[in-house]
Length: 96
Image (cartoon, rainbow, N blue to C red; front, side, top):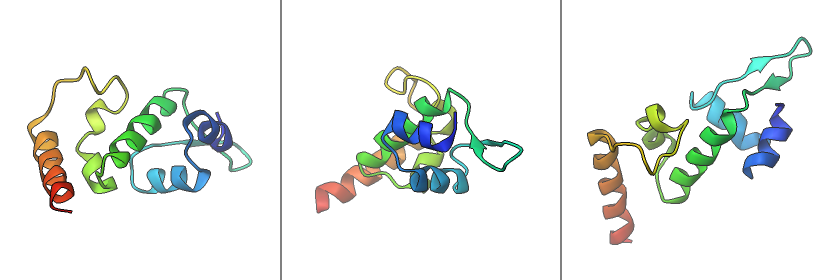
């Protein structure tokens, strides 16, 4: 799917998708005309990225969750690094 289709399917803007790609969180192939083409599974990954960002994590924080971004994150076994980051962000939010 092209960037506009992925944006529509996930609620992200094309600009955000390019930013996620630049940050190494998603990847695309290029068509002969230079357009980005994303795998169908990219929609799940983008939704998970957006969910993590919505709860106060940063793009740098999201990187530690890369192994579980392609599936149901709620059923994935928590990683120690992910728990550490989540606790740190929660403490920051609580302090605010």
